[in-house]
Image 1 (cartoon, rainbow, N blue to C red):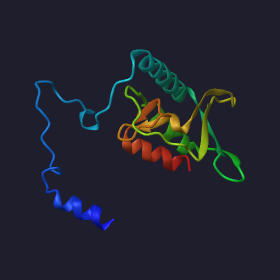
Image 2: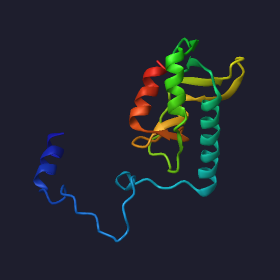
Image 3: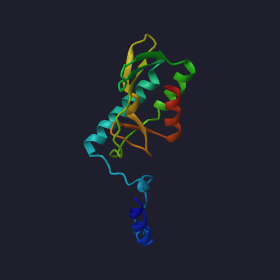
Image 4: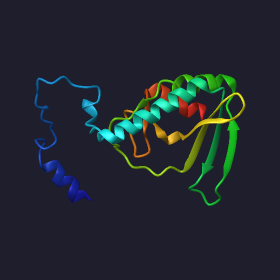
Length: 162
């Protein structure tokens, strides 16, 4: 271990310095610093249709039910709860702003639980059902994400869906 550290230090700093990115006449997008690749057109269209359906259901729903199923434990557990009217209103507002994911994933993760979110109408009928991991934030995309929200909204979703 000490030899490896010593050899790295003896190499000098020329390998550690970053060279500036070549400049082009193209404007930088909001994701240029993340080095994301765009999804194929067909996949992007599927995500757009999915986002449209979530936004429409969020505007029409009156209640939200959450089912949590822990899948990576010795004794799997399952629980179900309904959000309060205040939490429902806030989650509806956030879900009304979801955008389709247009980029490929950056990380592969294996969740320890599965949270299913059901948007309900006034009679308790399910308008739309989706997983919590379908929603991500642009700064951290994984293979499960199809929709994105702002970092603040993502944090609030995590707090609401305790």
